[in-house]
Length: 431
Image (cartoon, rainbow, N blue to C red; front, side, top):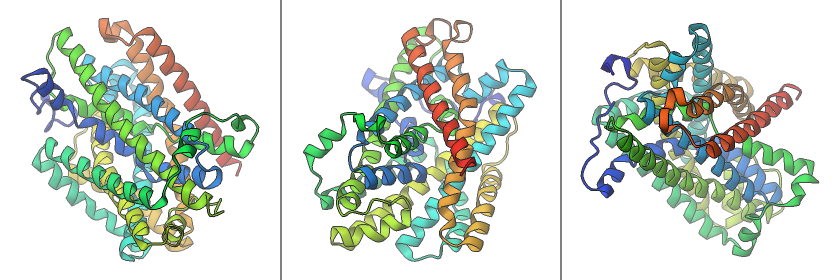
């Protein structure tokens, strides 16, 4: 494959895979953790906080089910990239008529801007909670993250992955500290892991559960994973590709299991803090931060909450930039300097966030988060359905196509998630 036809050419096949089986597996560790950051964005935080504060640990099983769905879809993404040597955007460009590919590109770009919008809001709220920076100013300050991304990319892809993993460790430590302060009841957690029949009798619980499921998979993560897994040097033979698929799937599974622990911690923190105290309407991040310190009896809990939120925002900044490059280079072969690409995407997110925050005050951030989730919901089928179709095709995948059982499960998951996202769009438009 010519270097000018690959996405992220500066990093493509830059990481050697050699040595013992353990060393070869270690070479594949990393991309999954970049993908995992997308499962811990402000939208996930909001749904988990709402579920935990209103229903305690009852929806923990829904969080687990959502993560299992995500693990399967990301496994298909890695399989597609390693088998074809192309990311999802490139395969869409290659397999669909040009007008169709162009529409898919526009939708993917809109999804990335929507993702960035949520990151702008989350990072700005984190700056406000930790340092008292006014929200509108915090929104504008997020433009400076372009220098962070450029610095990391200049150091090499392994260093970028190490930065993301370091922030994930900070997030894990922060939530571990909060959970210790919350003194969780293990019997309640065990009960929450069992699906409740109340989902079929309580309309409000069902709606919150749909929100958790609907926010599970975001389109940019499918493009992202298919691009960054190709930073590894993958051999041309079937056995080499088969081994690479196994390593990549194991990497993403471990990373998404970590994301599951974080999302479960958010829901359980809300359950053992807000729900226990009778605070059943906590969904805004600022409101959660305001309540958590007094309820747990220490300001440390509030600081840990803010640190975790800011770390999530910074991590998402890196992954959204990479996803944007993969989508643009894969669909239309247009290569921009990372700084230009990053500033363009971030500007499209900052303008509405800053305008709404200045005009409508801090309460407007919740509405913007909802709007970003609606845009993502709209874009999801246009990435998920081609992925399932491509990986089931013998013509495209050869003998490495997804097993029939895996394809059927993925198709059912796609149908469920798309249906839930359509419901979210309809309900939002109808108020």
